[in-house]
Every structure is written in structure tokens, then in C-alpha cells.
Amino acid sequence: MSTDVTSRKDELDEAINQPLSAQRLPRWTPWAVLAVSVVLALAVTWPAGAPLGGVAVVAIVLNLVLTAVVSTAREGSRKAKDRVATTLVTTAFAVALVPLVSVVWTVVTQGATRFDAQFFTWSMRGVVGEGGGALHAIWGTVIVTLLATLISVPIGLLAAVYLVEYGRGRLKRWITFLVDVMTGIPSIVAGLFAVAVFVLFAGPGVRLGIMGAIALSVLMIPVVVRSTEEMLKLVPHELREASYALGVPKWRTIVKVVLRTSVSGIATAITLAVARVAGETAPLLITLGLTTGTNFNPFEGRMATLPVFTYYQYTQPGVPPEFAIDRAWTAALVLIILVMALNLVARLISRFFSPKGGR
Amino acid sequence: MAKLIDVSDLNIYYGDFLAVESVTMTIEPRAVTALIGPSGCGKSTFLRSLNRMHEVIPGARVEGKVVMDGQDLYDKDVDPVSVRQHIGMVFQRPNPFPTMSIYENVAAGVRLNAKRMRKSDMDDLVESSLRGANLWTEVKDRLDRPGSGLSGGQQQRLCIARAIAIRPSVLLMDEPCSALDPISTLAVEDLIGELKNEYTIVIVTHNMQQAARVSDQTGFFNLSGVGKPGKLVEMDSTSVIFSNPSQKATEDYISGRFG
Image (cartoon, rainbow over all chains, first blue to last red; front, side, top):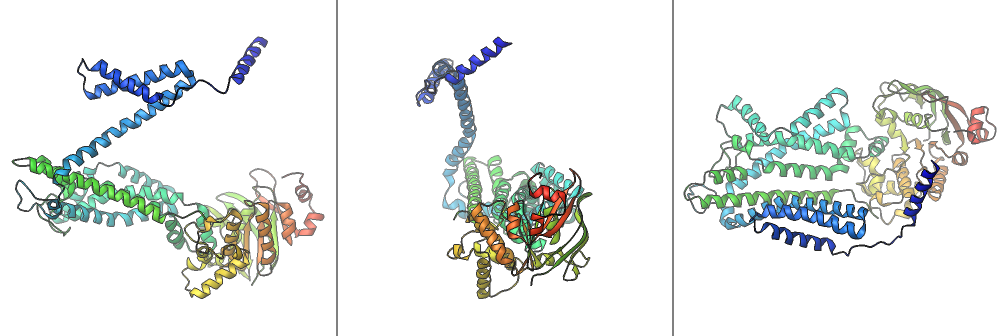
């Protein structure tokens, strides 16, 4: 027993007496190790004629092993674990970036071919083969998304206010549960729901802009409710009490204090929800159909939208196919730009409205 | 406009839990009444029940009478919102509205209630309230700056200015200095001394010196054990409570032997 204690004490002493400065690898080591791993991976796989992905996998594994070996030899095991962890995290980040960069690169290079004035000023009416544009689809996407926003924002916002400020007990639990379920429904089901509703009083085979808007709001409402709810929960309870203590009624407190304090978060959440549904394809495919001409009236006739336009240009390109496929890529590019612009708007809104601190 | 409040046989509940039992006291007008006692004895709960802020918490309710001006505040046809317009409140942590400027914070009581007021009248109200809270000279050049940019002590005085801008008859303060440094505490205490000329003030405090310094009347709350309701043990003028209390528990508490 006593020897055990002494040896533990010795160990402690040793740990304490370790010098503060230890041998460290120079700062460029990780890059050097990476370069060596890549060269080695190429050398090993080149004769076998492995594809690029295979080379990358071999290089990543080699990089991890070499980092561990080099660091253990010079810096000891604790530092080596740290370096391996850092390498793992960085590699995971780089791998996650690959599909993103690849998609953007492909869409930009392929879409640039038809990214011209005609694409934004022409519809597809009477166009066969070369030329034509997506003006009708751009308008369709804008109108349908706007309508969906008009429907879902009031419903979603008020539902969130109910859940946070008024709801209690069983009803609140059920609404929360159903909203959670709704966030997970496949988008095609939302489209089928809109079709089923409109078939009841407009007959079979009907295709309207408003149907698409309703399908999109079925997808959008739960997102708006959830994110707005989180934002409202972030408002400190003290602010509500401060307002009540001034003799302000509850509804005014909610409008002027709670919503005002969280408006930047809510606006951001709504914009992101809009961006999320703007690219939906499946529900629009069955509710809107496709036209070749511009239709501004969501209550009559079919409408084209960018995702559906892209889908049909790609799957039914006609002969020769390359013109339609070019148009499909450009439409995809325009959609990406649209969604990215909405994200930027969300950031601007959040910066503009957020409570200002500082002196 | 200061008013007398008569509390008789007040029981305060959180759901089924009786938090404060059978409080009877008279709160004098134009005077400072301090409530002291160990943590969890129901001082704050009692204070919040005076302007019906207690019932904001789900499940909370009150039995008994709180009479101001011959009117029972818990009468069926009394609107809690208008009660709170007559009895203002300052909280433990300073809580200025973060989206509003200093000016708007003081004007909040009027603006949030959508009362119309001319710009010049509003300017006067803001200035007199900020002067009343001893804050005017410090902020008069930056009224349009956000209220959350002030220091903690200034924020608390801003909250007091906000509370007195609605011209209440009674001002309730729930440990207003517990988050402040000694200098800001002194500023707030001086302010309480001035405000009592116009308002009835009830203050909850953990600081016995503070109670002795600022108050005219002191009530001592205590609870007999964990899970038991808090009770008003003794209430008397501050000098009597701190020199010659009639209850042993009061003496033990103020001399620091427990609590």
C-alpha cells in the first residue's frame, strides 16, 4: 500500500517536473506531410491506373498515418493525438466541400453557354430547337413562390405566437407534434394534397398556379412555425414582464415587444424558408404542369416554373438535343442565383433589424 | 398621488402549492416599506401579487384582499392591465427594451399603450422622468442611442425612469440593487429617498443595511421549513425592527445568526 502511494507520488513529481518547453515540429510540417502523402499515393496507384477518387482515398489515409508517425517520433503521443484529430477534422471539412464546389462549378460552366439577354427576355412560345428563353418560367417561379409566402407567413407566424405565448397543455403538445411531422413529409405528398383538394371542386386534370402555391405553403408552414417558435423563445421573459409591468396589454406586448425584438430572426427564417421552397420540383410538376408562354394569372391555366422547366428541357430535349440541354443548365444556374440572392437578402435583413448594442 | 395599500389575509399559490400564507399588512403612503427575509420566503412573490404580476406565471393565483383607495385589486371586474398602470414595478435585473433607444425606453409606457401625445409633451415627460431617476445629465446628449449600451447601474435607473414615466401611484422594487456595484447602489438609494416624497414605495432587499438606510417601515418574512409556506413574521417601523424587534426570529435574522 505504502509503496503504491510512493510510486504514485513519484509519477506526479515526474509529471510536474517535466520541462515546459518540448520539441515541436515546425509550422510547415502538416503541408509537407500532405505533399509527401499525395506524391506517394500517386506513385503507388499510378501503375495500377486507379481513378482520381481512389488516389484521394489513399492520400487521405497516408496523410493520417504519416502525421501520426512523424508527430509521435518528435513530439510524443499527446501532441500526436492532437495532430491526428486536427487532420481528421480538416479532411472532413475538405471532403464536405467537394460536392458543393463541384455542383457550382458544373452548373456555372454549363449554364454560361445560354446565360444571355435572350434567355431573360424570351419565352418558349413557338421556339423549336435553337434560341428561346425562360422568361415565362422565371415569372412563374416568382409568382408561385410569392403567393406561397403570402399564404404561409401569416399562418405560420400566428401559429408560432400561439405556441409560445398562449398554448399550454395537450393542444400545444399535439400542434408541436403535428408540425414536426409536417416538416418531414415528402414534397410530392404536398403536391398530391393540393391536387386532391382542387380536383374536388374544379374537376380532374386541373392545373393552376394557385395549386402550386398551396402545395408549397404546405411545405413552408411547418418550417416557418418551427423557426419562428425558436426565435420567439429566445426573447427573454424579463422583457415581457417589463412590458406587462408598464400596464401594456398582452397582445400589444406581443406585437410591440416580443415580435419587434425577434423580427430580424423571424425575417431571416422566412427568407430561408422561401429559398428552400423556391427550388421544389416534384409538387409543381403535378400541380402546375408546363406552358411555353408567359402566364401572369395564377388562377387560370398552367404556369411554367424554373425547376419544372429545367426538368422538361433535360428529359424531353427534342431533336437535336443540345439546345434544350443548354437551356436546362442555364435555368438551373438562374435558380441557384435566385436562391443565393434570397440568402443574401436574409443576411441583410438580419443585420438591419437586429437590436443594436454598444455605446 | 401616493396611495395607501391595505393587504388582508392574502394567500398566494403556485398551482396547488401555497407559497405565502395569510399576510396582513398596511403599506403607508409617501413612505418606503422594505421587505426582508431569507431566500425563498415569498417576499418577491408577495411583491408581485401587489400589482397582479404574479398571475402572469401559469397556474399562479391569489386569495384574499389587496385594497387600494377602497377598491379591491382582486375584485372580479378589475382589469389587471389598469392595475399595473397605477402600480409600477422595477425588476431585479435591469431590463431595458433592446430594440429601443433611451428616449423610446422612457416613452415606452405611453407609446406601447398607443396613447397619443404631442412631441413637445413627450419630450417634457422623458426629461422629467430621466431627471426623476437622476439619469438626465448622464444621457441627455445621447437619447437616441440604444438603452442596452448603458452601464448596469444606468440601465437600472433607466428602468426606474421608464416606470415613473407612466405616473404610477405606487412603485414596487424587487431587489433593484442586487446586480449593481456600490456606487450605482448609492445612486439608486438616493433616488429612492427622493421618490418617496411623491410615491408609495415597496422594496424587496437582501441587504439589511440597505433596508435600514432607505426604509421607514420594515416587514420580515420567514418560512418554518422547506416546502412550508412563507409568512409575515413581524412588521414595524424600521428603527424598531432593527433595534428592538418583538420576535426572536427577527432578531436572529437581522443579527446574522441565521438566514
